[in-house]
Length: 194
Image (cartoon, rainbow, N blue to C red):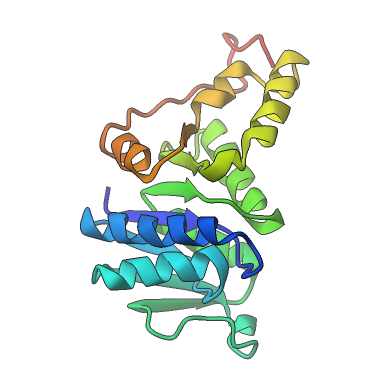
C-alpha cells in the first residue's frame, strides 16, 4: 500500500475535534510513509489532513475540478495537483490512484464518495480497504441505517464486510497494516440474502 485516499468535509464550521483528528491522521499517514491523495481543498477536514501531511513532510496529491481554481478554495503547496473537468472525473482519478480509502466525517460529498467506492468493491471492481474513521461516533446513525437495510433484505449482510470501522487513528493504521481483502459475487448463486 502506497497511496491513501482521504475523504472528508470541506466545512470550516464543524467542531474543532474533527479538524484536530484529521490533522493527526495526516501526520500519522505521512510518518508511516504513505502518500495521501485528497480533494485539494484548503478548508475543513481536507485542509486539516493537508496540514498534517505537510508537518510530517509527507507526499500529497490533490485532485480537483478546474472550476475550483477560481473559487480560491484549494491549497497551494501540494506536491502534485491534478485538475479534472468534472467532479465525476475527480473521483475516478482518486479511486484509480489510491490503494486504500479512509472516510472521515463529512456531508453529502463525503457520503457520495463512500457509497461509490463501496459499490464498486461490491461489484468486484476493486478490493481495496475502505475504513471509516468514526470520530465521536459520527457515523453510528448511518451504520444503524445499513443494519436496517440488511434486516429488511435490501442489502446483504456481507456488504458490511466490505468496509471496516476505526474509532482512533491507531486503529486506522492497524487496519491498513493488517488488511485482508474480502469480496463476494453480488449476483452469484450462493448469494441469497439480498
